Length: 156
Image 1: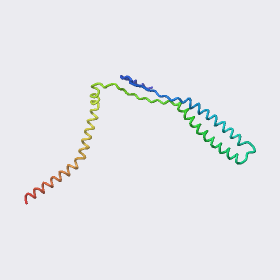
Image 2: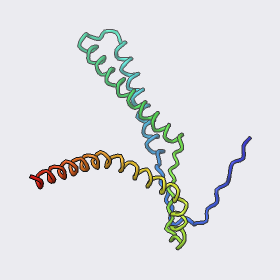
Image 3: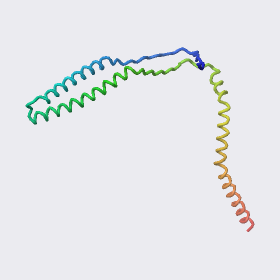
């Protein structure tokens, strides 16, 4: 079993906020709606099975039964989502310190980043030379040719 290092904080929290959402009411309402829809579906099933119904009545009852079943499934999904949200713990932590930095802190930070900054500067210089070298050759060639032409022109 490994040892977990403890982190020490030298700053105090300057602000803290908590947010909670009460889902007890919506869950109760959802349960009531589910019970109501289930009872209504049972009544529609009983009407559909009653002997002596004409075709028109059966079509209307079956249509209403399909609509109630769809609404019942949607309500079940929403209820399951609410219950899952209650059972799942969500923790968001945001820590900010407004404590003023000491005089030496930026200097120490710059010193600790010195090696990385130096290597970044050297790599930028090498990249710049790679871009400038072809242009230097072209400019040198143009200057050499123009000097030769100037000398020829002076001699004639």
